[in-house]
Image (cartoon, rainbow, N blue to C red; front, side, top):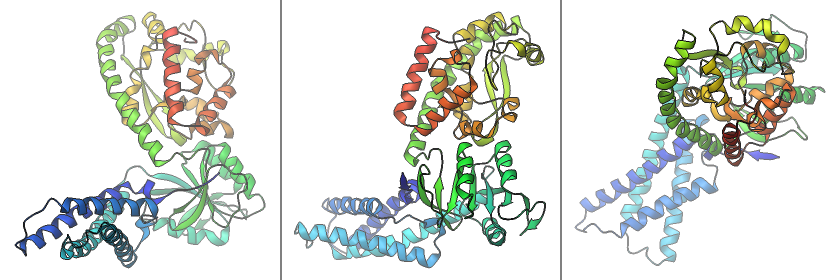
Length: 467
């Protein structure tokens, strides 16, 4: 399926800023005209104000006026702002003419609006872009990208990525696919190897995206393997990708690329999902506080030590974070795990066993009722996790992942997910867990999230499959 990511979805900040400009420009134009005239203020001008906003939204909706806005220079931006306002002014004049109301309103108000809005919109957009550039330079978090290309193009691509101001990008590695190169420097970036080295690098590192500028005969095989790992791949616009999923045309650091991924969530889906996470995490945090007051002393009495269990887990695309739970095991649980591996009921890279002797008496209760999971609302509020996602693996599990296992990390981990709502610990095959997680990622929708949440609640209430 071919899509095109619109400027509207990526630049809501500019859209809101332009609405402010339209309003300010109209207010200024109106009061400048009224001060120069004996005409008293009239509520009739409210209609013009509404029409100006309406035409602005029409321009936003029907044109790609925000496409490439970050990359535009001053002259191109001024031309686009003038064009934008010409559409607004033309639309309003046509409507007033059709309604036979064009003589009712001062031409000076409309003319002043046109001039002031061009100035304000151009100045405000320029300031916002400078703020974005400065924020990108100082940002702690960045998109982790590797470059995979041929030797002839490598130097130019590396230099352009180094000069990128439009988004915060960190180049984590350079791979040359058409020659056997390693540990050589190109434009200040060390070549880390070829195709096979790249696959292993992606499997074991935190990588968000792969920029692929390559047209060899094995190009499609490379893309397929990257997709198996769930990594978003940007491909040269000149490359034909027959049958690749979720194709969109977009820009990466001045390059026009075709992007393919296991799933490309829309801007609206991302906003709604994050809003649900925040709204759900607030009452979840309050319940966690109440449970801490009630369960904390019991946990400590039965096994002196921290009330919360804090463990490093692996999240989206390999990012590491600290996950929180109420401690349900004795303090030496991790050391005793090796002794119990023979009783692991999971086939694959996860560990679960019946009647685990490391679990405290209160631990059995809070696990059976899933109360031990409530501190994860801290992770959800912070943004490390989501309400619905995939189970975050431990570091030792992650280190043993094969290429196709990493695809389940293409989204944020969740408090619940397809696996938990489909039987929880009744499913003992790790490959089945991976299959269910990939099914969720490929078919993500708000409705599916709601369905999984309700199914999980029923599983908890009925204690189906809990350990």
